[in-house]
Image (cartoon, rainbow over all chains, first blue to last red; front, top):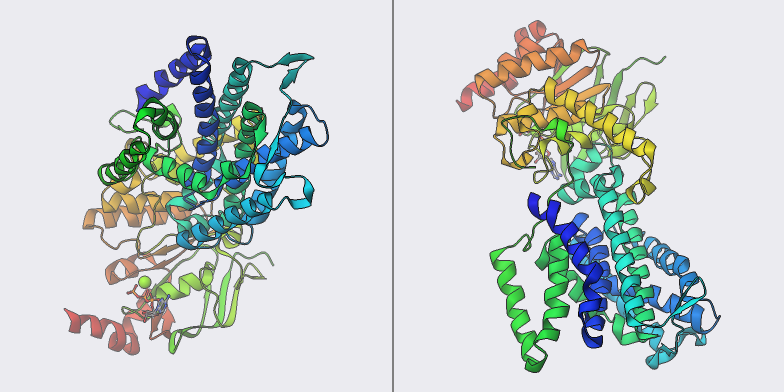
Length: 318
Length: 258
Ligand SMILES: Nc1ncnc2c1ncn2[C@@H]1O[C@H](COP(=O)(O)OP(=O)(O)OP(=O)(O)O)[C@@H](O)[C@H]1O
Ligand SMILES: [Mg+2]
């Protein structure tokens, strides 16, 4: 694991930085999807993997970010880049408001409630709330990216937009790991009563996790809307949430695990496109097998890092 | 006024029809090592749960340093300097020993929620300061060699030490230990006694539950004996040893068991 973290990540970043030039249009689009869904899956990891809360509604926040960008661009003429702050903030605030009354619920109940939220959200979009969501067809014809006056219409530009968003997410997650709030999430996940008895207000940190996860998913939504220059309700259905949920469980609550999960769920099916529906059959079984053989995920969580000066001779692990 | 005293007055806690703690009053003074003893199921752990906010007693008052703390949440009570360990060890078992102890620094750390998202120079310093405090506890409890190991993988005796180190990392004023010697061998129990004396010498008040009578008599300054939730005696270890009601209820019944 140590080697994977030390060398794997820089190599991965390097490969991803030059990747679009080796791909044709179709595979560039697949690569963008990989980046965007990785960001959403990592945001789900904050809530589900790190904090242990059974959230089955992450697609809601993803969609809320995408629609925020689409509405502000299409109806109000904001440039895509200018929509970013609100595409993060609106889902984050909703995440906090929705989490407030439900985070005390036990896992299974929380799961059902978050599915409910996701279904209501999609219904609201389909019923064209306030006349701005575009109903079942959604919103199309968004502008392309414009940065410093340059009109970036190519797919490669969208790719790098997605790539920067992923790097930003990885940076936030590494900050989280080395912080008091990040550790608090691990503690409350491991043993809530022990966490409270050592002075942690677990409720506040659970809501924090929801808010942070929602904000990151919202940002991924902006990239998604930019890629297709459109948004529509079915892309944010609760089935998508189920996929993000499964990715974190099957992959394991770690950056390589989550990315591997996204790769297997969203990229491998593209490779085996000829097999059409059979691929899901195979993936269903792959998921079942993975959970039986590696119940803590393919690449399980390694907890926060402890400083080197604490590791004395004779000890191992870390 | 700012005496570090814990005063329980007429505390009653019921579970359905069962009165687990019945009209209990006691007073723990600053600097004491105070013991609670009693047979199995007497209500000792429930008393601790009422003090530390895990349960709220139906009646009575729990007063700490002149403030009523009955009804506060566990983390609010930790904030006031009262920290506990559990009879059945409750560590963050997949996390390393060092991270477990670091959890005790949570309320002392000056990081805010946004430090989980963006770092600042102040955060880096705060992290380092707190890890240094963890190092002190690792040394004090002789746990340095286990720092990076997952707490759940360690032997029982070491886990007990990790749990105490975690509580001590809070810099408590009152340390509450629920059967700290349970499951320890003789050598480990001796070390525990020394540790408890050292903690008291740091000016920390210790309140503990213990089954091992020899240990209780050796370590405590003052004792409360409860049976069926009621106090049946209190006094110094010498007084308690001579008390007929105690011999009847507690020592007697223990002899019957064995
Ligand atoms: N959460 C609870 N719900 C219902 N009954 C409880 C609960 N907690 C404790 N009790 C009951 O209250 C009584 C006192 O339990 P407690 O755990 O305080 O005893 P104890 O003195 O700590 O015993 P031991 O020496 O076995 O640890 C017991 O009869 C127990 O079954
Ligand atoms: Mg008990």
